[in-house]
Image (tube, rainbow, N blue to C red; front, side, top):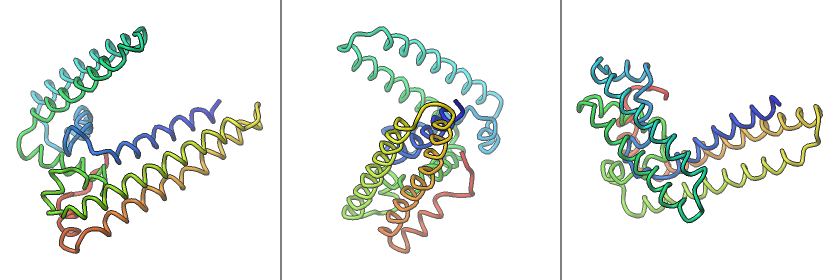
Length: 222
């Protein structure tokens, strides 16, 4: 069943790509705030021991709440799903905000740079960042259109991959075929994402491109 593991890992990657195309309600940092628990991120931001302790406590509390709400969803009635999902979203928003609140001004500035690097040009859909780069209304509309088109392309590719995987024959022969299918879709997904990024950058003026590049700071990969 190694093909299944490969497919799941790849689909997780697709999910990460697709999430980049939606403007986060949590601001520029967004859900990236949950990476603050990673030692290498803490090292980059020069997080002190007291901050690290508080971050660990917030994340532990959040994870406990997530498990509790997820368990409730498992036994909930259909008419209860909406309220529980809203509760889960509010928990995420609150935790992300509290995590960012533990950072000083310099740490938050650097973490925003890291978050923008992770999102790539799709981060330009963020209102705060759009204002920072003085994007015109027409530019914002074009960027939104490109993001939505890219998302549809990725959704279509993901659906086609799933259909091909389901149609593969059973047994070892099918396993090999599924592996080939997963591998064949990875470059297509990456090409679609890179194309969307390039199209968004093409919407910017030369000055805006320079400001965008400058706003990213030193390279750091989440």
